[in-house]
Length: 251
Image (cartoon, rainbow, N blue to C red; front, top):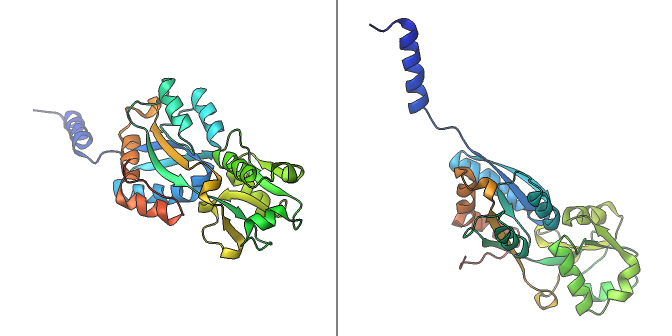
């Protein structure tokens, strides 16, 4: 006959083997422009699967540097195609997991100046400071530089530029009044009045294809893989498009 301690031990084994599985927690590095949709996606993913997502936001280049230096991010949502491909090439990303999760849009934003005709505003003298994200590390900053070149205003605005570490800081510069206007992501200001937001024509800059990749750190984590699968689904697509991004159906 089993003694009481043996029965208790058997009951414990039964509860461990038959009880509900513990929820996973995926660590995700996310380009700053995607902050709002990522937070909503994380909540929707948790509600659907029970798994949690912990986000870290920043400039794509800076996040990639952290990944290359051993940061334990399991998924990387970049604001370009370069870094996810580079991650795979350098053995930091899992081959076959790269896909475009969103196509971003650049806008000129000002809470104090009517930017309905953004090109005219940029070439005028109604402002003293123009905020952009660092073009070396932030794809939206690089797109802003392209737009200024297209408008032939690179030299004219050079002395007015205020450079943000990432697109979130760039928006802060504008909202705080440190710059009267700035180039930001449409997703950040999608709810603003039309007079405050000028959508930069697509032909002014190369399409901002934002790619995702599963990192080697997350290769064996079911929650990380599940989150990437979730990003490809209809529920995620509706959330992403709500913030002004395009979603490719061929990914």
